[in-house]
Length: 134
Image (cartoon, rainbow, N blue to C red; front, side, top):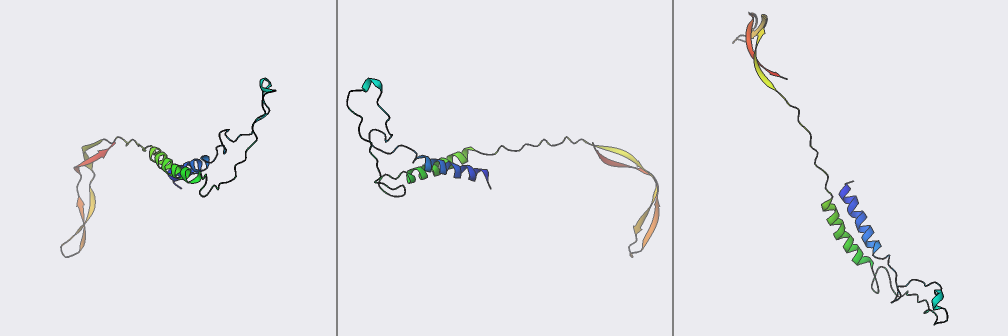
């Protein structure tokens, strides 16, 4: 599986479900308040705890899934465009070629005559120019 795809899917999941991980409630933030500090003793009691259950995670009425999902798609696209694999650079080996005169020993060589007959012929020793690679 492609790394960009995995990163994009992870970013979408984090943004989509991370948008829901906030306290639900009114001005108090929705957190349960603990006992009052000592300097507030004797003043008025803390407000009652208000549970807010009138919404759905998937539809209207306080849904935080779709904005997070769209943000995750956009964020995933940005992250996947930023995260690119480093180009692989391979140093090519240094090749040095030169042309040299090389002595070739005498030998018998097969020659094909115009009528298709193969004849063995002696080829005397001679110098040839060959390309030498180091």
